[in-house]
Length: 584
Image (spheres, rainbow, N blue to C red):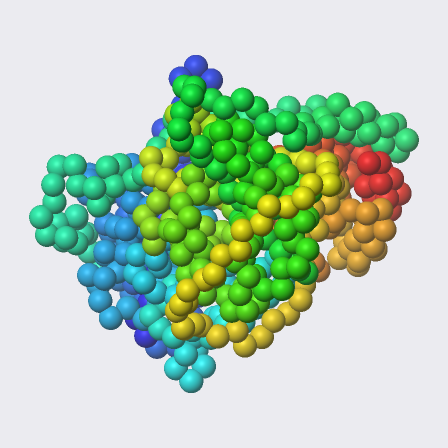
């Protein structure tokens, strides 16, 4: 089996600083390393019996150092895509170039990579590369094996774990990262643009900035101020948390649409669409959040706020969406969409986007949303921004998207040049609308022929972690809490109505399920209140809850986490957890 591992050299995220004078990132002297998710991909590939492992990267000359780390991890040879015309590519431009290189290599059975990089956190390149190749793909894979000549991969979702069988060639992205250091010598082939396509023009739209439909308008430091106040009295700590939470109440979404931006009058009306995700047959809070923001965006565009639903047995869904702000509800109700299937659902969504041409399409940044959005963007060659934390509209009707980088304290402001304009959006960035009794306006659409599935679901394990995106309070359990106390701490938090996650060390130990891992190598959360218990407070852990409204830390007096929180409680956890988690 020939396996190509797509890898990237990234700056060490905890070494990035923002220059307040130039409004630019300071990159000089920042250590560079192999993206941890890609290091896991190379390690996984090398562990498969009889595999020929080739590491491939696109980057400047110094990126060869990351390839030498891949050789130390078990890659047999490497390909370095290095050419000036590749520079300043966005995810679409990057994916196109990687796909061309994979095709040039030829006879590839499997492409492995990490689900994201720690510098840009787009989650887009794996599905977009698969789209250019025309291959099936799975994202957030936790285990791989070869059974009777077929791939079997287990995928982590917001609802648990799914095991799929795939025909090759295929592309898989891995859910978790690992640390890697050391280098080894070996074969590194350098390919330039002309090696991939022959003749290259000065402004070749297949590569680099000219082949990229999105551009960065600005970079900003949005590090939230945290007071680091310390308390040894539980009542005083709880009162301070309650006071801060009241001061930081999220801005509500409004039923009243703002006036349209731009020249008036105009014959064109532009709609804002939200892809609505269902859980247990009902729309998720995450979807309601995007519908709430969608009313504002639709007003500025002068159009309708539209909810798009794919699935089977959709009775009652349209009425719920109308009550939460949808002017129109488009239902694609089809028995073939009874359960999420990446190949079938992406084909259905692509068909709807092509025929109905929404001006803006917002997609929840969930496991399935991060799978679908980039795949559609790749197949239709549309610009897309992943994991947005802010959205706006300019006077020309373009979607202004704010996304996190380097753990979340730095954000990039991005605009695309293609339409439809696509974005995946993180949970709890906006508030749902207060429900109103509104009669739904429903449009039912028929799906035509959909492709035969080349992947087969063979097993599913329920282990939902959706409460981490829904709950107003999240408790994060850290490695300084003894393993024998974790079950008790979790029970106390959940009895107070909080959702529970944990740091990487706790999840890797098996004390809390891996799909509840918070941090740079796990998932982000943004509750109104985040309570940490026994969390040391290193950079990787802190990035998991940058967007939390208030942070309260329970730990011993020397823990760095206390200084990184709003409220530090030097109080025994067994009393502190229910008291702090229950203040809202």
